[in-house]
Length: 190
Image 1 (tube, rainbow, N blue to C red):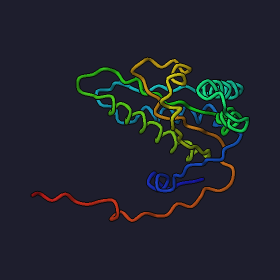
Image 2: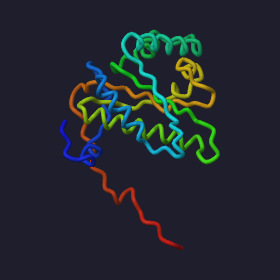
Image 3: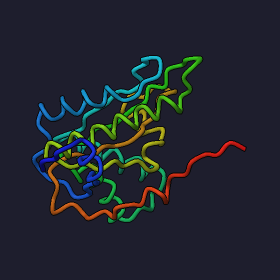
Image 4: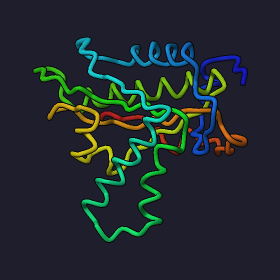
């Protein structure tokens, strides 16, 4: 998908919920991480870190998610259990984006989490520019203590998102062009 300008790429970025093999190659991942490291980062804290889940590790993660869900609700149906097991299989590669949330007098945790979120956004742009697709997922799993423990999070760390990445299945869904005036106003002095 050739884009003539960065603005064109950004304005055409979409999420791809249906992803298949091949996963992004090493060069694409390297470019995505390099772009992520350019996210705004007050005081150069480098508050983000990333964990890649791929190959057989995806089914192992699905089994762990199912185990945790079953511990919380032993009456889960087989269909619900299969759904939990299959969640990591929705893409050939998952990048878990973690905000390290470093104690700093000038940079609150929320700012560090936003920096991590911008990093994920930059990765999505690189993936799409290179012909791959991605979708950023969060939900209750991102905040679940046992899921956080699976990824070795320290108490102050947080999962900002699960970035599913792969080759898009099907065409990008058309996204309506929004009118800037619907979302932007100018502040007036009182």
